Length: 132
Length: 118
Image 1: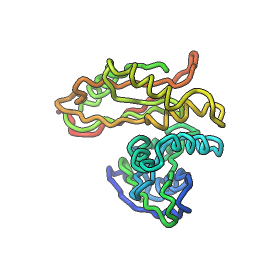
Image 2 (image 1 turned 90 degrees about the vertical axis):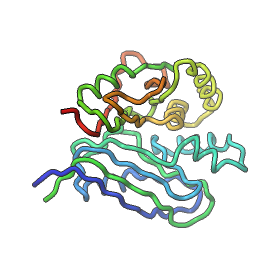
Image 3 (image 1 turned 60 degrees about the horizontal axis):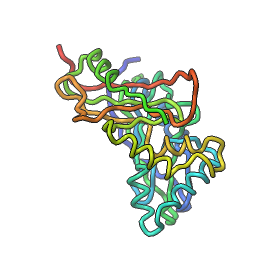
Image 4 (image 1 turned 180 degrees about the vertical axis):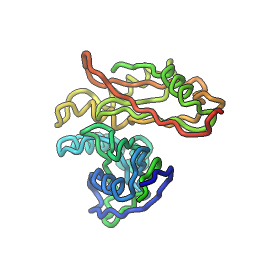
């Protein structure tokens, strides 16, 4: 088995009802395993309007709290202000083939578009890969 | 909130990695701290804004305020490395402890990539 430094960029589609928070930790873990990333960084970016990617604990109460915090923003401008404040991307360190951002902190796709459909997330894996 | 200045560590990590041009990424492990790039003289203003937007009480989750502050501010920073030093232009890298803790060991991971000095 050889090791190489590489970068992989993929787009995935996440089904959404248009107003929800979706945990992407499983997607990231599956991709890290399938692509063979050993040490490096996994990056995520939400391409669609009114979609955020945040790093936090995926717990129902906390998701409601996040919703409350977002609702403090004036409704008319909520999407744009939320994107600017909370961000549309996340970066996660990977060591020995595992994410190591902390046990409870997961990448969450927050969709406040109120437009159901597939939402596109770009995932970039960069670092040292194992090659069979 | 407590602010820990990590700027000197940033310089040390770059020097140790012997990188002349590239980028350094800093990641705070955990779901309640934050990492920010800021000028020292705006910390009071930032502190006030965060405390007003995300107060300590009034949430469902136990320590929601710490999670939300961490989520809002972010837990990683990307800084260009030019001529073997972080290109900060007066900014400093701060680790924010968003909740009261005592004798708690925190972990920050640094990734440096770029052209090495030979």
